[in-house]
Amino acid sequence: MSTDRRFDQADIAALRAAVRGTVHRPTDDGYQPLGFNVAVSRRPWAVIDVLDADDVAAVVAFAAANGMTVAVHGTGHGATPIDGHTLLVRTSALDTVELDPAARTARVGAGVRWQTVIDAAAPHGLAPLCGSAPSVGVAGFLTGGGIGPLVRTVGASSDHVRAIDVVTGDGEIRTATPTENADLFWGLRGGKATLGIVTQVRIGLLELPRFYGGALYFDGADAAAVLHAWRSWTRDLPAEANTSIALLRLPALPGVPPQLAGRLTVAVRYVHTGPADEAAALFAPIRAAAEPILDGLGVLPYAAIGAVHADPVDPMPVLEDGHLLSGLPADAVDALLAVAGPEAPCPLLVVELRLLGGAFAAEPAVASAVCHRDAPFHLYAIGALVPPIAEAVAPAEQALAGAMGPWLTGGRLPNFAASGDPAVITACYDADTVEWLRALAQRYDPAGVLAVGQVVR
Image 1 (cartoon, rainbow, N blue to C red):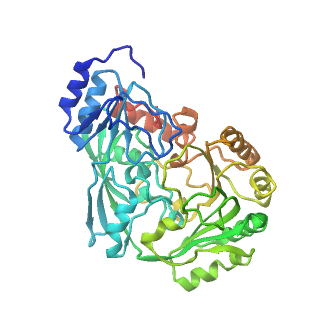
Image 2: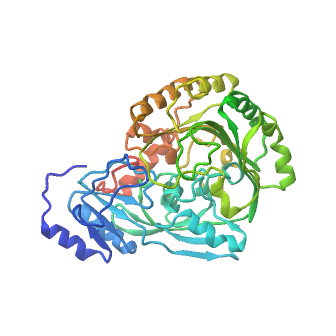
Image 3: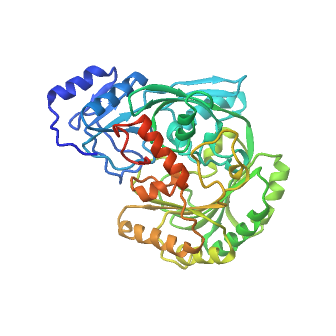
């Protein structure tokens, strides 16, 4: 959406008068619109640090009156480009975490990161169903469906949402549950910001004080042996077992273990919710695949769930690409190794295969906009857009997708496909879900106030 209207001082004064929070223009010190991926261009007309749902509603109303769009910024993960026709709502002040240990639920504000909820729940032996990176925001992760380290055991994390408070594109504050505004409840879980800006969620918690898991690392020279062993091993895993495997080319930076820095390594990630002895015995074929160079497996408190993937926490310029796979035969592993293995001049930091299936493939108790549940694997690549490899990252990701082409389903997952490209967005859903989301967007956002970034239109 674009507009020829020139915004003058009266406009910014009206916006500032309409909200209790702070409004920042580009010349103000608090503007700072960049997210986790600093390669994404974000130059909104203003950044608004909202204090409550009424503030969000006021921003949406102002945008509608002035022919503008509204985007949301929680932690800045999954950011897409925005320009001077957009207002950026920043939700960091919506930081409430209220636990009900008896009911095993938590009420969480839209500005809260998963680690905060994890730390609050840990003393009660409860586990919030976060993603692989606990530094990610709760709301954005759940609106994208939520594929976490326990996805095979519990399904999508959004399947465990009980209620959502949201400001829809028409400026109304609504609560969505399975029985109240059920159409919104369906679309908000998986539809990203298509239907509204989430201000608070109520989520179910799992009783899981600890787990067996972590990561086992191998030398890159053993990539073929480990990848083929992992492929065979994953064919009969029970739903209690969750795993991914990643080819890593990590730079020598603070925080990177010396065994992993400046070389190709292979990480096999593992989370098992059953007894430790059973979990360890089940993992034995991977231990036997090659000699590990770093062993991070054991019984861990759930509060350490982030150690499994050890995702970076500092902002960086990256290019990401994710695809769902129809299967992983031996030929697919060989194709991946040809472009990202030890003999390939690959610049990508991470090339990951994640096993899906299990509970994720089962029909959830309450339907949602999360699609492609039948895909057995997910392929994900990350490249750093830094000299001297910046120009090589996009071609490398394209080459990877090309090599794996025979096994790509054409589908994607929303949280691994941050893009404003309509083709990428619609690939996250089946055709019926796209049409339903479009129809609901017309109902709840008739002026197109939210028609920016990763939304279905």
